[in-house]
Length: 213
Image (tube, helix red, strand yellow):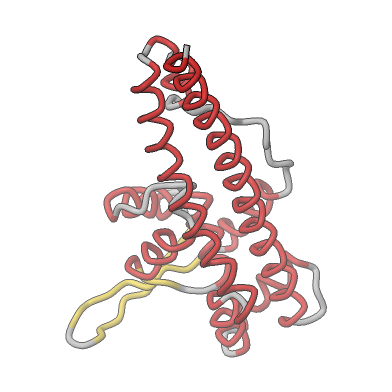
């Protein structure tokens, strides 16, 4: 959770509400979007001096706007500079699938249909994000780009991290990997949908064969 928040705050200053909204929209498959979890993570980051905040009043409501510190940037870039472990596939729900052979065939088909429905819904959601980004570009990056121009501290931090010559080049490289991540998610979900659909169809076929016999 902390690393995701640092990554988001690398782009621009944000309130708790804005952070939660971004996580809920774009990172729900990676971490919790509950206010309590985000507040707890922000508290840990504040204690370790990775982030700071300024207070302001908007519509008679006191608000805090969080930003990443130099220490936070250094720690985040250090973490980011190590290879991602794409072999880490630990998922306790896989245990259910492992033991599904203990259930009657009709129940297995029922469960496979429910699993397929959830996968197809998630695929549709991620595809919607992809279509929006492919057509209009990343809203977050577009907004961040306009902010950097008027925020020298953030622009300096971005240029230092990306080692790019200007803000547009930095924005393009950031957006490229956002697109890659969405495409990775779509490809993985599509594989799962196809794989589980084939298994479900095989189970249905087996039942039909048994009935015919």
